Length: 236
Ligand code: SF4
Ligand code: SF4
Image (cartoon, rainbow, N blue to C red; front, side, top):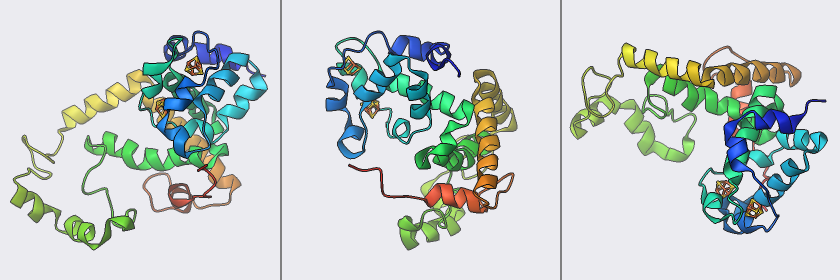
């Protein structure tokens, strides 16, 4: 079995984020996610600290590591100077790297995020762009958003935005040169590698679940399942 503690320790965020947890629970007391989810950052620190590979592997496959909102409130309060949020970031990274994220419902949402926000960044330079927030994916936005989406150019003109055009201003088209630079940043920092892993393991999972899968885009069964599936078993 992999020595998960050693593996986690290869990431500087883990070495910085965990010195010695005394299980006081202050991080859980301040944590907004713990207020709503079945979630306890103290317990995550405790499990990691045991160095027990079986328990850490279970954590990497669990729902719980995806509940953190990365607000960093825990960082400000820990009397031992630990940063549970950074430990959780590293657990997420290796859950993606090893394919364990496909074991949990919240983990499988990584694929939906990659195919939306992730691909948006690479393809448009924007995390969220008016063209990619389709009413089909966001029915909660109602008819106003549908109208806006269909008439984006006219609305942007009225607001003085430079919608999808060269030059400066809000909603401007990001140049190829800048997009190439964004891609390069993802390659150098390992983000592109994690994107590839998310794609690869999600495709495998789609096969196991006998769901339709396409190499790109959002028009496929596995994407929509990851995007909308909600067992309602996450809240307290
Ligand atoms: S606040 Fe710090 S020492 Fe206390 S349980 Fe959380 S991580 Fe451990
Ligand atoms: S960063 Fe995560 S674990 Fe820390 S307080 Fe915020 S939600 Fe909780």
